[in-house]
Length: 93
Image (cartoon, rainbow, N blue to C red):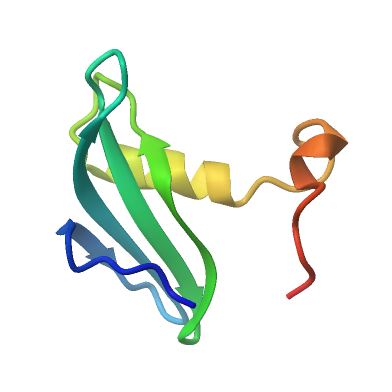
């Protein structure tokens, strides 16, 4: 079931075919007052990742290309990029 984004503000809708990355402002903040962003990454219309837990660098605008790049780096981690426990709950696509 897809995350309900109706309560969020759409910041970016990045669509380099066949990918789509939507970035939303949740109107929540981290303890150090950084905006918490929601995101949805899909390929050919199939949702691959979505969440409401990304906080960008405090030196980048929340809707900037740098923020999109940081999120994509996080979402495209592979085994070997971090410890194996990070992928424990992943499912096969």
